[in-house]
Length: 301
Image 1 (cartoon, rainbow, N blue to C red):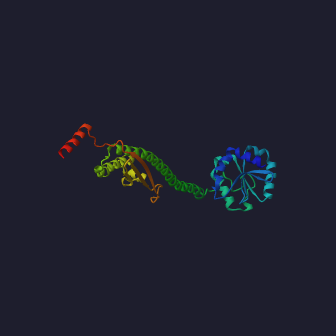
Image 2: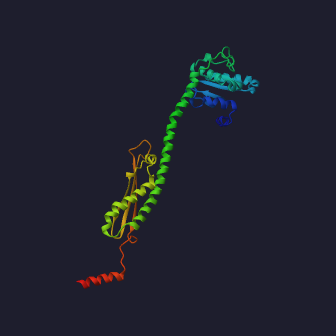
Image 3: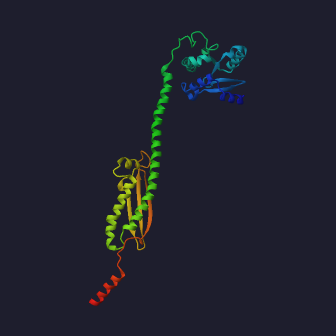
């Protein structure tokens, strides 16, 4: 029976699918319904075990099996269940009335309210128009769905913003590698070997390279990019430690607010380059002139 019930769940009729849209996930006043549920040797269309309520949908084929339906109803009632039946056309043409009737039975778990058959009892016919639809209860579920959507949209936006920011930072890290290559090559070509030029190299050349690197990474005067990436121009540092054979170039970038709405979180990237001194411009003299100058100096003495 369980295998058959599972097969029926995957092959619901159009009527069952339509009603299940309103019964699933506790949409009807928070009551849990099961579809194609096994009770004894029978499989019922929908069942609320907490309220002992069974919902059956009848098409034209049930008119020819009245005796079997009678035995089925008798067994289910003997098990303590109440049974309510609806015609297929009622589900499609008057779904609000069907839901209202189900709500009445759920809110008043009383055996006397169980209809004698197929929703035709006196004063409770869904087609009679005597039952008013509780708009507040039905609209309440729609309002709940709307509230959930309103709460989920900001979370989705925060998640999307975080993904975009991580992607932008990954691009900046790649650009950081290119910027370090630019800084190293320029330092190698424009710095001086002569120690007298060290102040100019550190104060003028280094700062100019740092400025160009900042322009490349975050642009010039782009406040939006600075706020989005959490990187300001003063967070970009370029330092040079000079040795006899090479210079150690360190490029650091600090990003604040790595996660949206968490400004206290920081991340620092660092790239280190070792630049040889052999390609740097040095003072060069013609050997013949240099020897003449040395000879004149000796003669003078």
